[in-house]
Amino acid sequence: MRLFAAVLLPACLAAEQTTTYLSQISYPPSSPNPSLRSPASQHNTSLVFSLDDTDMSLSFPCSTPDELVAQQLCASLLSHVPDCLSTITTTTSQAKARPPAEGGCSRSLEDWLDQPVSDFLTALQWIILEESLYMGVKTWKFPLDSWVYMELMHANPPDVLIEVGNRFGGSALMWAHLFDQMGVGTRIIAVDIDHSEVHELARAHPRITWVENDAPLAFPVVRDMIKTTDTVMLVEDASHNHLQTLEIMEMYGGLVTPGQWMIIEDTILHNGVRNDMFEDVGAFQSVKDFLASPRGCAWTQHRHKERYIVTWNPTGFMQKAEAGGACYGEPPHGDLGLAESWGELTSDPEGRTGDMLEWEKVTPLAAEGAKEVEAAVVRGLGVGVVGQALDAGTVEHFRGLAENRNGPVCDEAFAPLVSNLGVLEMVGGILGNGFRADGVEVKVVQPGQAGGLGAGKEATPKNFPASVEVVYMLDDFTAVNGAPFVVPDAYEGKGVEGGGEGAKFVTGAAGSIAFVNGGVAGGTAPNYTDKPRVAVSVRYVRSFVGATSECPLT
Image (cartoon, rainbow, N blue to C red; front, side):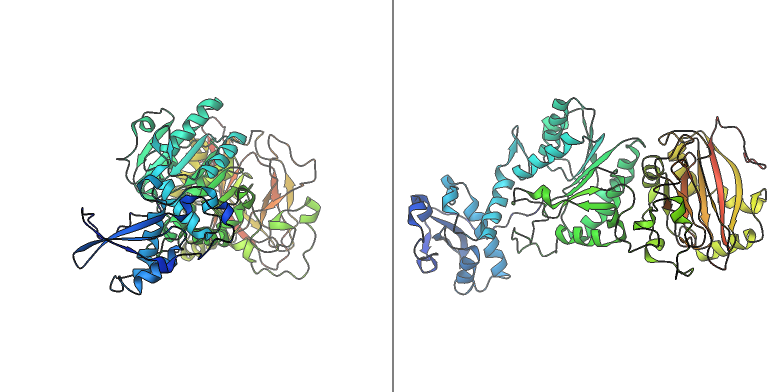
């Protein structure tokens, strides 16, 4: 919870000071309900500062709103201070939040009932930063949010919990102890740019791996620590800077697995907690922008996790949905290309041309990076699409080679597709180190061609495919020009008995690359357009699989 740097006025508290009481800004002038007020509510707190080389202590009633204190001071004694209103408003809230024994305001609930909610939340923020402990370790977490986290982790414990932003390590230690009590094997990966302040109790816990680096730079290390079969949860508590938080969401959110959670902390900044010294729009805007982007379709925002009303993470509780989502507009056959049956896939979509719809360009099956592709192929729907990975010149070149062919090819001209290093990295993540290319095939769906439905190539479980088919899209793939489709969770030779229920289109702009689990059932939809749809596919198999191609590769 790195929301605030310390905000202190230039001060040196000497033995002799001038004390000024601003009784004229007392608020409210009389309590509307005196019976609820304890003597503590009448106490003053103070700001200490230097003015013309004189140390001064300004005393004011705790019931005075922070902004009113700032307005009064900045209009008189401190009018020369740069950014006076923001500085004094923030410093006033710090002064109120000091322990009562140190001159701070009362912490009795009845003494805050008539205060502005933002003043209460801002004072509470300073209390959390200074006094919130877990087993003696500073823990910058709001206690009610920590309770909700424990509920989420208990209901669906992940194999890996990534916490970005750790400072003293208190929350990582708290989660580690929770998983100890639950008797689960959850590993915690703790990422922070500086681990010098991590408490020895947290540093010594065997569940926690500490990765010291800026989060974007640490990402490759974190990614490589996660196994393909791991379920992953993310708690983001880094800088709370708008663009930095958005970058972490886009990067680390890809590691979160369907059904698990991404929690963005301290979205309360500028949305309940006031710190006018922090000018950035903050993480609240990051969440808003992320959910409005193409990636947002994979996430469901759960505001009911804020059921205690006060939370430091408003809008920040997000659960990753099963692959797909609902942010790409209306495709021709049900939500996001999801068809009720093979029959619906083959129904003629009236009024459609070959032009791509928005959801077809930015497919719900989109994935970036090796780990996202692995998760999509092995744990998701059985297919992941990397958008427009080939430039226009490369697409034009290979389409020219492929357009007058159909079926297996042995032409060395296609070798660059087989040896594409980026593709090999992703295939290796799915199949492991022991794999090889088995064959290259040109796949053209001609105008009016009906397509078909079938079982997967191998009777293998989803999480252990024997092969991966890499499909290079040399034309736009749409729901009306013969795009392939998969039948989710139809593996081990099954899936066509139900008529292809729940079939999902695999679409994308020309130059995109699809990675398809060799065990998933699927097929090709009809081409209703007047142009052929061209692709080249390369099949990669585990080393123990025998050659199946007429032109096997080594």
